[in-house]
Image (cartoon, rainbow, N blue to C red; front, side, top):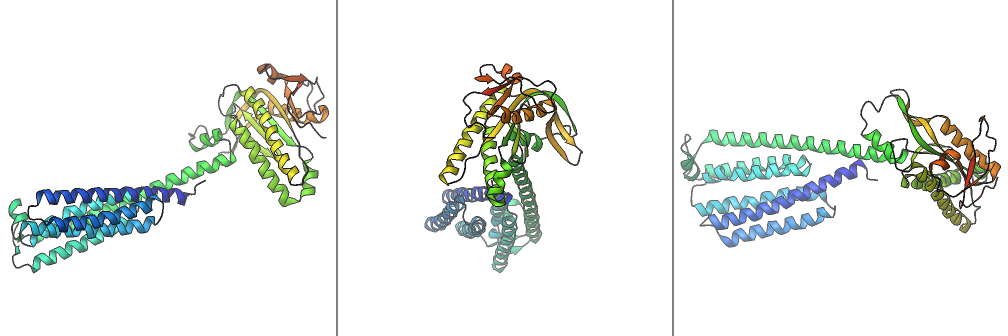
Length: 427
């Protein structure tokens, strides 16, 4: 499962890759624009600068897509963009044959586009860095313009005279610089907000993934997207199928294995059994020591819940056979478990307080399923089903075991052994 940092890094890598891709596209478009529309431009110089920048950016893009050097690649891409587009300003100026004041008047919009594009990276450092570099670059152009004897400080004339003529209006330069700094601050802040939003989403995604390790996918999904009504104590009466399993002789087994080996075995056993339960659409209500309480239909209506429960019991027996084959190969004794299944109406919902809730199933159907599992000791069977469950799915192959006495049950139901369930009880 991906951690929050890994999810955020993946999102940032995708953003940096998009940023570099847009830089390459922009650099190509800028090159074509200068070659086509600036009559006095020097084609070889323009192509040399462009190709060098594109090659470097393409190399960075390759590394980022491999999830390598993501942050460093983004920083280098920012610097390369400034260095690659900066000369174009001078090449375009050379093509116009005007005073150096032209640099200050036209070198600014290109930088704003680059600044806005950095917002795709989800990294506030990039727009902040671009803002500083653009401000320095703008200052450099302003200094060159002031050093040009053809530059004239004047009031704001018409647009054409302002752009192509020698006049340089200090108020407009200050305005543009202030606008640049303000835009940089806004883009940086917006990127920071976007990064925090993605980080929060990543944490929620990780939380939902963590929930699925403790609850069934259905319960995890409902908890992660629950409305306030769901997260209140209470519930409803619903038809459910309850499956209870228990490892035979677990106390003696754990004493012979030792605590560390016991916990490792139990974790592996529960993992494999849970996979079978989830695969058949069941939900793990709780682990009770070495026992498992699973339900079908508790979190919402599912098709054929009885058949799913029986398929789960068969799958759990198959999984146990795999475990025992591994244990025997390692020179260890095989283990056995018992399974009881019952169907009926139960109260399904949240128990506890508003501060601590547990989604569970309550009712006689749960108690009876537990007693049926214990009855396997009397009958010597591995899987026992109640009459209620057999009547709900009559096509299941079973053999009657009569009505064995069940502790705490005044009128025990007729029980049936699931035919073909290998690994009979060893109690």
